[in-house]
Image (cartoon, rainbow, N blue to C red; front, top):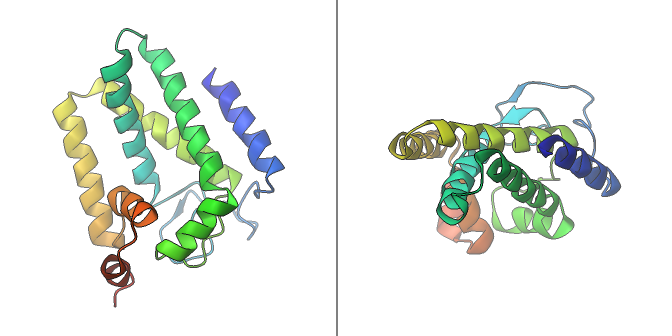
Length: 177
């Protein structure tokens, strides 16, 4: 079921004009330069950690509201939510918002490859949370947030904050000013 949903997102993203792979024509497993036109175009990047955390959050929330639903169906629900986010994230309104409110000045959206990888990263985070005690999951999520905050001056928390309520001091700090 999750694979069918992923196939559906490919069709939707193709219909929206998203590139299947990086317009540079190269496929890499990792893109470690945030301020690069290949960011969000390759299989994984620094923001892949945010998608792992999405999965952990979705597991926790679905455990709270749907704990009687078998875990494989909760994973399908999480995949639907993440796919919905990938479609929204690659819409002109969100791409423009990222450009205006965050340090992602040249952001053009994700390649389809990157979007599918983001969904897979979310599923990985969901499965990690399904296997680990909640305290370990929380610790791992906090460690990933701290790591990306230190290494790239960005993480899921700042990403959400800057999309919802941009703060100039945060934007300047992220830009290294």
